[in-house]
Length: 207
Ligand code: URA
Image: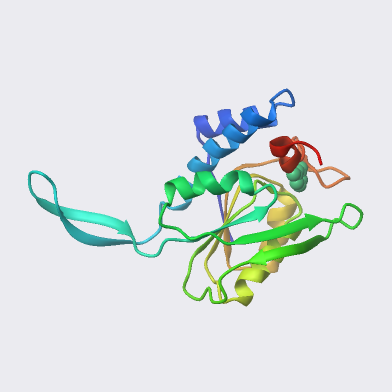
């Protein structure tokens, strides 16, 4: 499993805003959206392109477009804050949705909704979730995708924990991870340390 850590001063600055407990929800959402643009930019760097001919006002030249735009799949609820930013960079992309909740006692993921194309054979997928903590939710979501034939899945997250990366590597899933940081560890409540708290609550307020 490949892991790309996007090490960039602007990404670090947005992440700092998100980590700071004093940051209000509106500022947190804006920082997450801007960070998502940077992560998606890096995640798309290696995607194949088609060439085609265009005319500038001056001459004929070669143009480029993505050969096979990825399906974007935000994991609800926290991934919602990444969806529009990713779509901004990839306006031609389609979007599916997976709703996962974490059982706060067992920490196991529970699917409460899935809205995905029936056949994902040959379609790259970008799974959007700001926090990859234990890897359990991502593994669950990835299995929903591979069941439909997906074999090229990029997990895009703001923060990840070493425990999740180890578990996902062990699971031998067809994924690569693009993240702005691999943090120190998980605490006893399975929150990422130093982390940023609950990414859903930070964006939308506690429910
Ligand atoms: N989900 C979050 O929102 N935060 C964490 O630290 C871990 C999982």
